[in-house]
Length: 408
Image 1 (cartoon, rainbow, N blue to C red):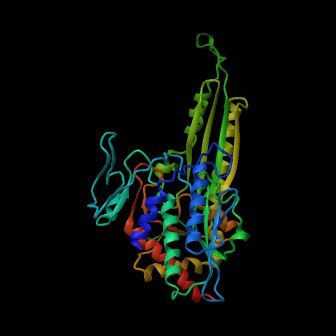
Image 2: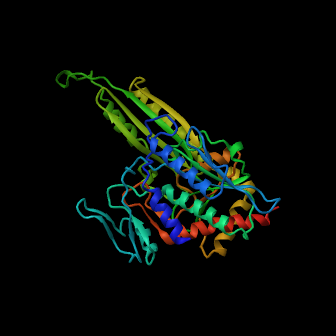
């Protein structure tokens, strides 16, 4: 399957599917629509006659089972790439038998993937890895997931002696801007359990993610000529700086790990007259998550007391920890762990320091843990993926489908 998954992946990254957070349409970029239509035709070519794409570019298809009485399972990945770095004109480069050292991606632009900044790169030594030319992201998040799913389905089609139940395939738009599950039709999809193939390094298996909220803080200042500003001017930028200092420096993304939550100032814009701050709040623990939201609300109330109501807080929940919905059917995780061991993959069960479509889908009635793609350094020019890991990912999907025949 190595050649097949590699060939597919290289084709897929040629599609520019960068999500656009400023576009409220679904999909948010035309490239996603083009890619979705391509995938439908590819799936039909594999014999999945019901392959279809709806008006919002959700792709769904079914590989019919060859045994009865088996739960219908699904595999899901997303079409889009992150808007952090462009996904247009991706020029992938394959480094065979990677030596585990620094990689110069673009000498002219001085873009280097160093093992000091990215120590996980050393785990890929001896493997064939795909990197960028230092001007774009790669798109392994999540075109590697799509390539692994389609390659696994093709293998099952060509090897009918492998027993499996009905398998549903789903590819979603706009996951990277938090809208991947918004219009996902769980009933139409028709699976009892599913897995997103959207994780990172080989072996990752995840069924816990952050509880998440987003906050927009709007600050109204008052601009006066600085020469006559005493007791009159109210600088919105200074208020913004004061608000930022109210949140502990030890509770930021760059100072936390594993189960530690954080406040993240994601964006700030403004001038003396007005300013806007965008925060995200994250925590795996629901009680601590609520405490973080309460802390932010209290902080803004204190600022408003000082500045006479010049600050407005708009705070909204985004998604919740899927653990609540997956634990009652924990066997869906156990099956993957067993399948990994049977395919010589060391399971790495870790919490997601983020969210996936699976988190939302789990609360929509479709328990949906997350499985690795094999990639590293997502959302950056340093993004890369191991060809061997993609092959193992495709093999794992086949093994999971096979093992579900044991579930009655």
